[in-house]
Image (cartoon, rainbow, N blue to C red; front, side, top):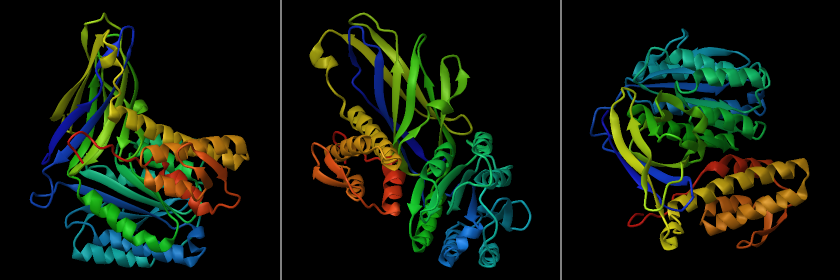
Length: 428
């Protein structure tokens, strides 16, 4: 481990008599890695959709090749890597054998030649692609393991049950950033993959944008130097964990990813880290106590893959009959609660619009406009304005547009889980 971790807790620990729910935002900040220190071991797999639809139009395949070559060029010397051909089966593009090779001038050149020679054929089976990537990462424990997955279509050559089964097998073994090119892929399907693999999701509507995106994703992965970080949460006897979510830089529900580590203690995967900061929302239900009582509602520890403790924090509960204390709203908790509602309103509004339920779509997307305005989420507000005509952004009075470009609708859906950090006292 080369970086230093700091944990900060933002909450209103005061609860009224009889209350049980404790909410806290945990900000985790890592510093101290970077170019001045030797980089840790890393492994990278680039999964390139080479199904027949990538030829329609041909520019998709050409730009995917250009993007993959850009990602290869962005690898550090010594990083173990491979390129996978994604069709209705998964095959190796480079190297030919099922293994990773160390990046250097010679292997980069060989890999780029192999990518250039690829032809499109067959269908789409994302689960098989992930399974081959997982196989390639075997034997690289302790490394920062990262994959890029590109697709232009739906997962039509394997069942949803098979994809779910493979995701269950491989999740936690590596991080996978997912990109959809064009507008013929399913946002919900690819979001499921990205969420399970703790990676990012985005749309690249125009293939020409792929190279810059691939280069940026690879550079970000090269900046990680602490692998397999976990958040360990201990709670007292009788407590119930309602949820644990990453809330910044994007919404990811980690509740179902808990792995029991000891009595009343469980681990939640946070993937790999470089110099960065993320926020997590913990919601714990405890047994109500008497006015004046003070309770440790949760003890948070951060651990790396070797079980080294990187940082600790405490979540408290104090019962009071002072309403001035118990009714104080913590701005961080309120902000991220609103961000979750914003994402939900967008996704439910778009689903209602697609099904022809105009009334629900108008209400949900109107609520989304009001929340985006209230929280200063300008990027989301601009995306919403491409789907609805806005009469009053404050009250969320909107009308559905008659004609909406599919790329605009998919961009709004894809980026609905991207959050905006609240300004903290004394911070930026």
